[in-house]
Length: 486
Image (cartoon, rainbow, N blue to C red; front, top):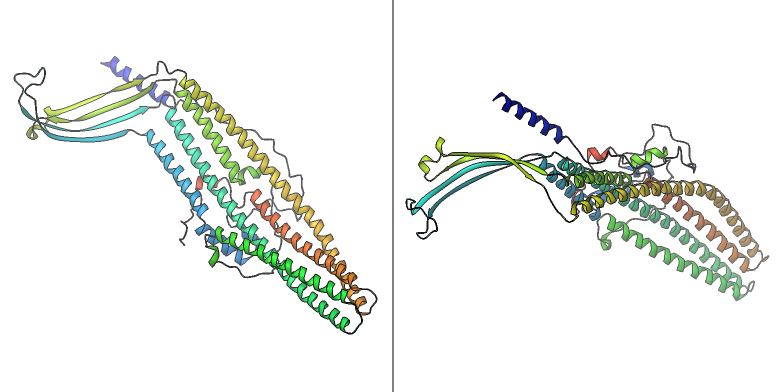
């Protein structure tokens, strides 16, 4: 008896020891060479170490109430964001489904029937009754002993995929928020261009009146009137093109915030948004701030755990089953001690031949791990490129803007001189037209440069990961209400 007890203790200890075994490779994040700092300098004062982008609402850096309101509506009504949230909820449900394998499966059964045997049943005993009752009630528990870590690795892979889905949701949210901000600053840029052209049309109309007056007085020829009319009509045509472009951007913004374009409009706003100071930090922080990087890393971890699942398939599956209940032919003795029955024991299954199936599954799992690691490195390198690109754009746009401002002032001075000399009869109207063309082109170029700088700053924030961080994976993503709610 003592020897039997010792054997049971030894078997229990062995099972507990093996249950902690895992055949997955030791996971290591794919190595990436990290530079100490970004190559391109930021075009503003260096941020303090404690500076961070605003958590979540990064667009508040632009200090624009309309943009903030639109971003809030996008959060509540954008259908693509709602779809990304639903995908994340699917991943969470699958994670819970896989995790349930860690626990025993307990089922209950209850059967009550009245049966009649056939008189011609083969091998029927002479003393068996024609009719009898069958009453059974019981509980059954089944549990897989995870000796090789298959279940635990499946759970680890599912959890990593859930974290990747959370990062996908954050990435989709950031992309939509940045697209909305980009469209909105582009819309404001067009508003400023439209105002410039409206003012220019008014100025050209006055110039046309001047040439007509001078022509009627015999001072200038009809050619000057024709040139002035051509200049005015061409500028009006360009104004119509700008208004068409604005309508398209307005429609795009409507779709982003989940509104039908026919009933959506934004008032014209010629206010110039100030270029915000964006703390870029150091390159290593990018790995924590980019949700797409986090998603790629989590999928690499999931692929690593899946290798352990594929390796475990080479070893036998062992499960324990236990059954207990009562069984009787009559209700009167159903719940008495003599009606009790039970069964307990292990079950072992081992493939003896599978035609190379398990080897192929293992090779596939290893290839998926290699692919995931390569994709992770690609995502990281692309992230560094995007940050460097936008830092370079902002730095060079700053220099270009200073030069363009000087060019605008010089062109306006030239136009003023040419108009004054034309009134005095010192030059013909062709000089005025040339000065008008240059003045309009330089001022329009300055307005477009202002818009490009703002768009580059939005792209930089998107490249830096917005207000997201890797800690959000554990905290869970912010929920987005279904379209039409809120």
